[in-house]
Length: 160
Image (cartoon, rainbow, N blue to C red; front, side, top):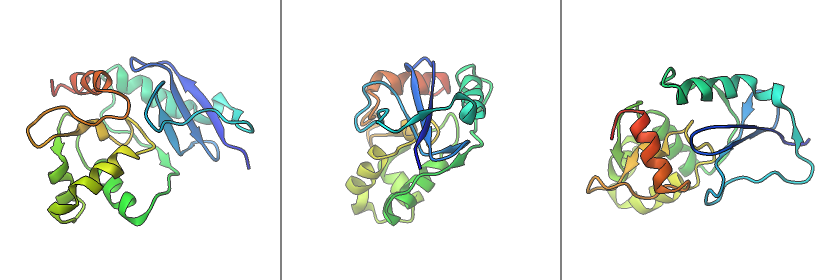
């Protein structure tokens, strides 16, 4: 089975949206993103398959959508899935530290580095809001898409 994909213009650059079937979202990445997806041989462009995803991104970037309602098709280790589920609970316009995210995931404080690794491996930039995680000092740290994009997203959400 081939991966379906489309692209979507955004203030972050052209988003690459991909998944195994229409509407099932497995990856969202920005140009130059550390660990981001790339169109591979065998992938098939299908704009109609992700029309609702693109519509929701357009509404989010227009300031009209605060919570995505999408069918997610990602897989990760149990640990990553636990951290990603906690990421999904961070509300629009809020931030948490890596330590707070660890607590939200029911993990020990000493797991902060591993939590950071799971956040960095998030395949769904923006949708699973890793941009809402900040350093313990309140600094903007660790965003695979680059700190300028993190600032843009947090400004859009009214945090900065």
